[in-house]
Amino acid sequence: MKAARWHHRDDIRIEEVPEPGAPGPGEVVLRVAFCGICGTDLEEYRAGPLFIPVDQPHPLTGRQAPLILGHEFAGEVVAVGPGVTDLRPGDRVAPDVLITCGRCYWCQRHQLPLCEQMAALGLSGDGGLAEYCRTPATMCIKLPSTLRLDHAALAEPLAVAVRTVRKSRLQVGETAAVFGGGTIGLLCLQVARAAGASAVAVVEPHPGRRRLAEDLGARAALDPSSDPVAALRALFGGIGPDIVIEASGAVGAAPLAIESARKSGRVILVGLPVRPTTFDFFAVVTTEKEVIGSLSHVYDEDFRTAVHLLAEGRVMVEPLISARIPLTALLTEGLERLERQPAETLKILVNPAGA
Image (cartoon, rainbow, N blue to C red; front, side, top):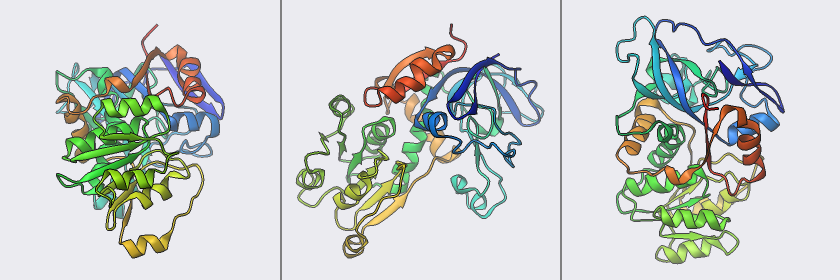
């Protein structure tokens, strides 16, 4: 089968590899329909290894580079292993790609993204940028018949947004602001509205993304070069939003996000800056703000909810899809486009079986 394998930094190859073979106990094999690529894939390509094990196999997956990339995908079950009773060939699923030990302190508390040995398909095990993928059946969320497979491939980034809003403890009627109009930010906007926010503003430098944010329901889309702190306070009653989500990962965005929140507001950091930053601790203490980190997702809380939101049409992902490409075009029309045109590119979906 064709697959995209990470060998080294700046060395991803589209090559023929063996099919994953018969599923073992508790596993299924999927025929991948669509797989999204994201900033993490680009970072592994240009700056890795970041998460990919190179010097020794990952303790949970037993795998190391070269590895098949791809952690945002959906497909059809083609084979089930011994002990799998909830899935059968022909079922359409999207897998939550996290693999956890199930034994550590964090797993016992169901805080799976904090697992001491956490792994993920597409980063520490073979993922979805291939024609077939073998995955634990427990990861797979069955898709309603109304949900398209290309849209279901965005369940993974949507699950990140669901967890972010869940951790914000948003109450019906509260206001919110989202820094960053990329895929995660625009999904956070929609999840916050679905959760009952009375108004959501987006802070984003690119005009096209600001227009898209307004199309997706933002009360306002603000240019960060024009004092977003003052603009958000003016927009939300002179005090600022109840909740601020920092989804851009821009180094200077987190301090602005923290400053923008109202007194006793909640700030959720989900973007991953490329280098450390600082903020005014005194101002946080004297205004009793909360600063909360949010990482990844949990299969039965966030990922399952993401699938339902997609199936019910409460979150729109078609406007976020910038292109659908075959696997053979992954480098030139996928990763390199994302690198060259980040502002104009949101989600690129790869069809591994496409010509």
